[in-house]
Amino acid sequence: MLTPRSCLNAISLPWWISPGEFAISSNNGSLHFPDKFLWGVSTSAYQVEGYPAEAKERLSDWSRWVVNNGKIQDGTGADRACEFYQRYPEDLQLCDALNVNCFRLSLNWPVLRPARTEPFSLDPEAIAYYRKLLESIKARGMKTFVTLFHFCLPAWLAEVGGWNNPLTIREFQSYAEQVARELGDLVDYWLTLNEPLVYVYRGYVDGDWPPGYKKNYLLGFKTIRRLLEGHAAAYQAIHAVVPDAQVSYVIHWRPFVARNRFNPLDQVVRYFRDQVFNHIFPKAVETGDLQFPSPLSSEPPIKEISGPVEGLKGTIDFLAINYFTREICEYKHGWPPDLFGIQSDLRRLPSTGLGWEIYPEGLYYLLTEDIAPYRFDAGGRARQIFITENGMADDFSADLNEGDWSLEDNTRVDYLISHLVALNKAISEGVNVAGYLHWSLIDNFEWSDGLRPRFGLVRVAYPSQQRELRKSAKVFAEIAARNRIEARHCAVSKS
Ligand code: BGC
Image (cartoon, rainbow, N blue to C red; front, side, top):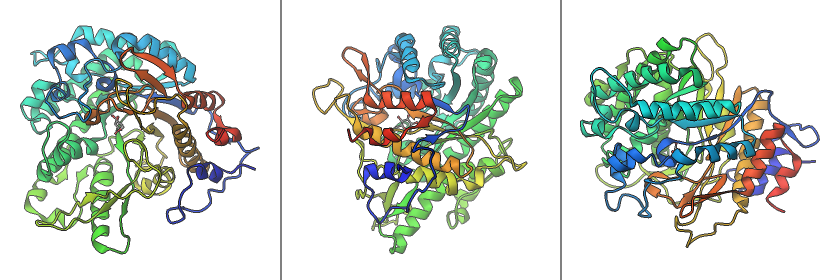
């Protein structure tokens, strides 16, 4: 008889990371999901839209960044991306084929607010576009998840300091209030910010995303505070317009592992990365108070940015979690010592086209253990949890001349099934997961990695913009339609 563990074995985990048997009693080998479970796909504006005004007028920090030579690894950009702006009716038909009942998109803040105007207003054409798009999604009976900030700032705000200028927070609040008024009737779940810590790391530590600072930890930490302020302001603004709105932000959760678990320095690095990357934001939202881990917390410049954030406490109506991989980290010798160490080059597990280890157990452990402090609201009620992104990239060039672009994406099928099994196990142990949204519906622009990494259930041939369902799309469609994983799904990739 099939057990979920045998699904996980499809990716042959080595014994030293194996968490032991996943022994769920299953009904004839199939694994059921709760009634009314949401099955969906996720996208973000800049990665798919190719919004004509944005490319023409370079309205965002990102559309400017891509034209700076050398910033995008494969030299591509997102001026066309997937042309979702024009092709969304076709892409929503793909959603029908996938049997999904929810859809996540982000609003293009730079297009909605291309310049400062008094009194505050948003671009009426862009509002009309998003109304039509959201109406088309709702007309198909799908629930909507709408993100307000998915990594792209209006260029004019980026120019005056972005999140570190208090004007950006006021602007974010007005934008949230206005879209709640204009589109509130069409939104089921609001997400103020996507992955604030990924944004801070890539933009202020790695420096390969705008604003492009390298290892500027202090400015990065200040930005965390500004993002908390922005989230709180937007949460309150949406609730003021739509009192019973469901509002949250998206956490990217990444388990950190010490390269050598017997090396105390690797363990210190692991501790800091986990505390800052995973816990700092949800802890602050829970308590209303931003606190950095010790001994950082006693540094005077850190003390200055720590402390209560107005209106922040408890501003989370559900949990939205993105999960992709784990990260092995290690201490790097040198002066001055770098508490945050580096991401190790070591890979112990089979990895994706982006070199990300495939670690489905991480999803189970994060749900059952890591997020325990955030699972319940102040009244002790279990918050609903949505996996708002999970997926993997394979790799082939935008012009289709390099790489294996076959539709037989067996590794993605294994990835999908093994993560759903892990999710199902967490649900069977009482974790209140109410939905799973795969990243992504279609191949799209993967930020500084360009168009090469392919995350889609649906393949996009960029030169012709032709879409085709991969094998994983068909497997996902069947799981979504039946609301269960069949025994044979676990064998599908081996056929
Ligand atoms: C982001 C997406 C991104 C995906 C894969 C998430 O961190 O929200 O924008 O494409 O991961 O890297």
